[in-house]
Length: 422
Image 1: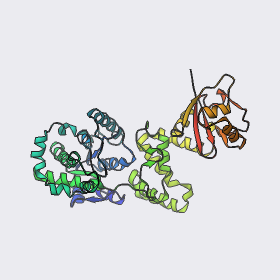
Image 2: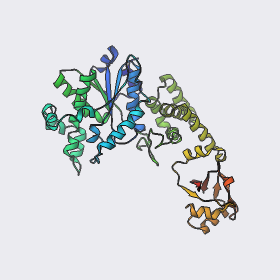
Image 3: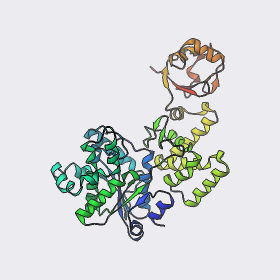
């Protein structure tokens, strides 16, 4: 199977230029995808393009990941309804370095035959003057052509319109394609379907300036069957950086995948073969409550992003949490599991601290009266142990690993309380 067919059966081929299938089947190609350094981490939505580059390399082609240190100073209007806040050069440079590290998890930069490359377009975009850009690049774009692009058209029709800064983004991204063609004989640009206008503009510019035949391929934007935005949870964006989204939270995001989405996500986000995905799809139809497909999806994607140890830790924490055995969990596991619940610190005296005092000082209850009523009503749990005596005192010995308590109020409201030291 060739790369084109691989993307096709996985549902990852949204559109492509004519003749690309034959080119990919006939010869090794160098292709690139751009990554926006608007944050210090990539997120789960960017896994589709990241894995497209990785799949490209697996089929013998040479991938280039561009981290847009130059275009990031301007901002891509594609998919945006309002103007971006411009970042400083220092912010962009710091984000570029962070993304460079993340991308190295997926791409092989040391293989002899078709090594991956990381390129920063600031290398050329920060060195070309405004006059040179207008004369050597802008000359080849009519205003009518630029206005016809969907990303520009939508913004012009909006109340705020579009600034000349973002309007010029099309010129910069098109110039990237020319520079990569010159430096690496790069003949393919890939991206999300919202990038089709930018990609075709780059194809046109490369043809006009270099008389070269180059190609474009776009991937589908990921959606959910329920209509919610992919990659968002109640806690916010699901990041690839473990400091922003813990491996446990990351694992849980995938295991909560809707049955209607799971087969599609197995195709998009894993390297599993078609036969195995069909087996898992059948398992979902036969016994959806077992969530076999979701478990395999969670394992595969967490392994790709965070490694085998993270998978083992996430699965162990999941088993303990959902068996109701919080008391057997370590402090580190609990800090991951309850990373997004309200947390606070409390001082515990040598002889313990009255539990009603702990509840009010940490904000679990608004008053000692509410704390007393909660306990008498059987609605308070500490480390999954129901508290029945409002006169009880909490001691350091009762804390998990001598460090913290998990306090549950009613059925769903969890609080993490650390013992203050010093």
